[in-house]
Length: 295
Image (cartoon, rainbow, N blue to C red; front, side, top):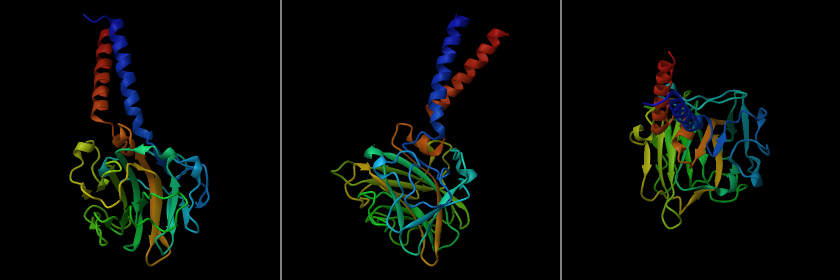
């Protein structure tokens, strides 16, 4: 029979492991940018913000491209089950241009080798607005023009992925999943196959993330052959892109997370992995058992 002392030790071990794993649910991704610690106004040449960016390029910078921090957060639609929480001043980012402009940063030490998950929130209020990211392969101070080779964006209510194996110029209509004036969660899985083969990509718009990666369903975009991004073995640089082809202000971007850890899906969605949930359940059972022993 298990003694109270042995049971207590087992309970503490299970609880510690459960908390350690589930503690990753709130923001231990390799790259985190919520924009909440910026002063409102122009982002260009603003330094020291965000997690996972190189000190070599500690500013958002790309020539004369202008992006501003706005005084409002974006939040994922409730039906997605997205569970990451923001803290600090509620802010998001919006680009000002009628052209394809970006702000850019180099990722920390180019460490994102292998499969990476990423997520970000966007909002377009017009069909001509565009908001998204790109993973360009040049230097962090590269051209302020969007790298058309590696763009992932929401154009109005169409999902767009650049590349010869991408969506094509018209994109994929996702108006059944998101509408203008509504926030959208973009979730992606980038799978580089080393420098000898082409990279692969899956992207979902407003997926239900509550059942872990296995329960996501069919991606809105999937290219498991040749994406057309060249031979990439890692993510080096990140660009923010937001513009309006007919006006001044583009769409909004917020809550950008990227991770290549074993818990990457959890890192970018806030949803505990099945193993973590199992340990939490065990911890709960252990707590109930301990309470009975004490009564």
